Length: 93
Image 1 (cartoon, helix red, strand yellow):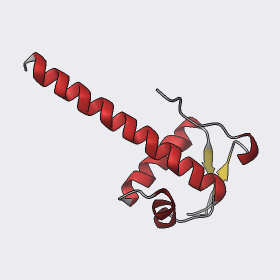
Image 2 (image 1 turned 135 degrees about the vertical axis):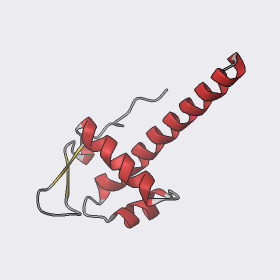
Image 3 (image 1 turned 45 degrees about the horizontal axis):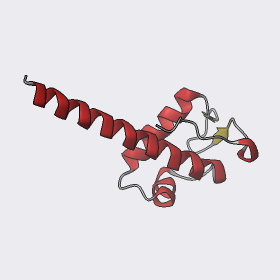
Image 4 (image 1 turned 90 degrees about the horizontal axis):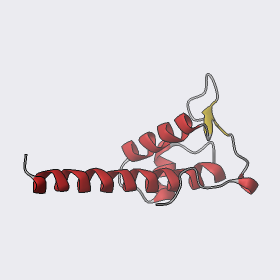
């Protein structure tokens, strides 16, 4: 692997990380306003191209502790940080 290949790989990785953070921010805003929304509804609200991006963003937000799933209900989510005091779940770079 050459230095140019390494730089391209690093740039691709960084771009995907930025996209993932942007998706998480968009989903955070949508789920804060409508915690009961379906994956497809969240995708439409965020303007994302796939439901997979929404699922991954929800997983990131859950791992970070910003949302919780209510046991026994597929679409029920609990927003841990109240909307009035919500801050972006990921720092801007």
